[in-house]
Image (cartoon, rainbow, N blue to C red; front, side, top):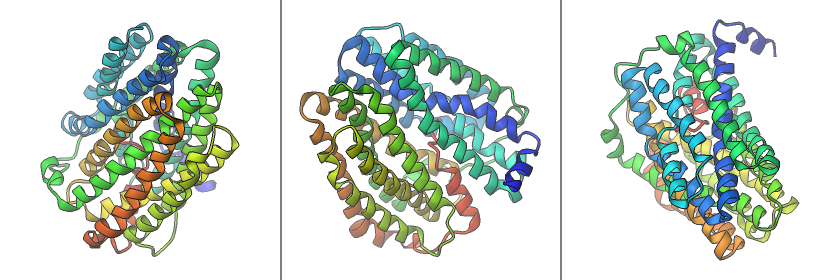
Length: 409
């Protein structure tokens, strides 16, 4: 504890943590705020899922491009454009009611996602130096992870009694406050991009990156199905208030799993850990289709979140071990672009399946997706990722700890 108290005395540290907090809360709220708003004004869970999926898809597909803008222009100009644009679009969404307008504006919201985490990560290197970098990443990850759990709870607390539009207003207000605070930080305004951040096309042609991208696509599809099935199923059975605690259970367990693995002292190689974590996640997901929103689903989601948290960290570790030199930022951003895009597809499909076919079918799809992912990892990917079958250096582990947050944000 004393170490952390001393760390917080370093100039600029507390300001960076406080400045990034509102924007991160806003990101954690936007999906559920959009879902409840669209469901309120249209009465359609399917359309709510599509709108949420479109937001995620457009944000994911352009994650790498936003990273490139920061690498080229620094942080101030991109943030000064994306923050007010995103806030305006979220407010505009709260006043439209037609399906076409909802879908179009949701797409633009994703395109305009302010790169809060992409901007925050490099500032730690500037503020605290190499000797304190791991502590900085650890505190930053805990704070960011806490907002992932708290965001859906806040969005639900606003949307259920006051309406989905109020949840959107709160989401926009937090991003406006946090975005302005980050833009005004001297460390952010003075930050200079590195001379080279890697070549995107060189990375996308890399065979090992392609192998990981394929696995990420399957994993992302399953995660998207799961994330939309929870609020959709809860709303369908007349208990929408259960959405937030169930999503918080899933996110909290996933975060806990990630932090446990990220802080471990072990000789387990990234490839060995990835194989085992994928197997654990697929096994604990097997009873998911037999659960209903309530305690039974909460237990399974807790176990599944732990397994997925383990798998995500090892996934990033494998990437760190096999990526081409000079692609530290672009590898992270482009892998998220691929994974997040199929997650968006899962969100869009899941809402329709829950409302028009069966919630159990959507939840069963999560289990099937994780089983397919595990088979792919064990029998196809592992033999072709031999470079990941040795422990990472401390520097590489630091990079992975920073990658526990979504780079699209």
